[in-house]
Length: 82
Image 1 (tube, one colour):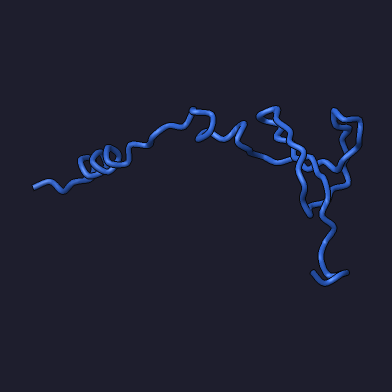
Image 2 (cartoon, rainbow, N blue to C red):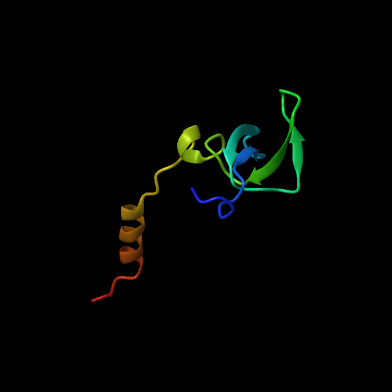
């Protein structure tokens, strides 16, 4: 890699507030907010809206939408008379 053209790559904590889940990983993302991790060090903190801890697919709370039933109901409701 050429020196001086790549962003800094270091440890960052990503936190999903909805799922009460945090993970320490490495990233080029930065943040003004910080958090003290369980190892006693302070790391940049990035809040995310959704993660595997709160996403319906991973938590098993997803529901299947019955699109065929909706289409049939629409056609029955608006079919032409006679």
